[in-house]
Length: 90
Image 1 (cartoon, helix red, strand yellow):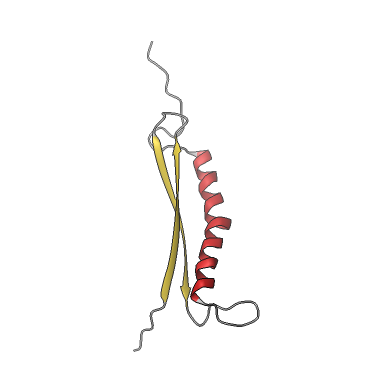
Image 2 (cartoon, helix red, strand yellow; image 1 turned 90 degrees about the vertical axis):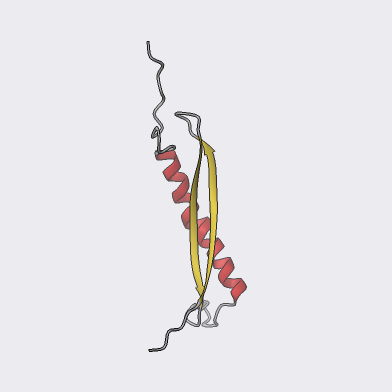
């Protein structure tokens, strides 16, 4: 059996923020991945070059993954406190 491996192009972004509940620095990561292969074609049917595939991965990251990441951060900012403000003991 013949196995053909195509080059993977992976791009990631890191969102670094301060939790509103506890004040901790927190990071969330999003990534997008595309492959350079003969089936990855443009609208006109031409095969995408490596540079075009990199651009496609960056565009997918900006359009799909980053908005999901921001929405997730707004829902649950910090895994430790889940965004709940701590009250001092009386």
